[in-house]
Length: 218
Image (cartoon, rainbow, N blue to C red; front, side, top):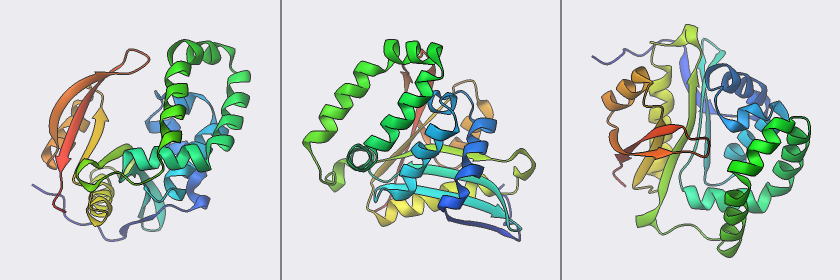
């Protein structure tokens, strides 16, 4: 049974003034990510890229005027990455160096698990600077979180539906997300809302993730 709409619930585009809320939500509800461990300086610069990239999507959910959730993603994964490398590389690099300098153990982990992959990504993204062909375009739902006291009233569903609407408007034929296999609540939420299991991937830290997909009408 679908959740009835809640009065006072709305989804809007994220603004720069929302970054402190989004960072706090990321730390509170999605604490396991490497970027979250780098601190608010880097995390804010990273999340900002979703609002400034033409291929990014950054949304905030409000309930009775109060920020209660957010979603960030991209309508074209490769175009988003290229834009970030061109427009935000310097800012992210500076923030990242400072964050790693203050966290030696994290710096060692970065060098061991991520540095070579990031350098390869920099070289790859510098070669091409155009949008992906429509048929190969892939949207990514990167991060979504809703405050504990606002769950169950449709915030997550409305954020997700708004993101899918943006993807459809950009003629994105397929979208993906990644979910922890042990998070049965999240997996049930996505399955109920039309996502299907694709495969399983392992990240740089050895964490397993289920890939889920949805095909959109464009």
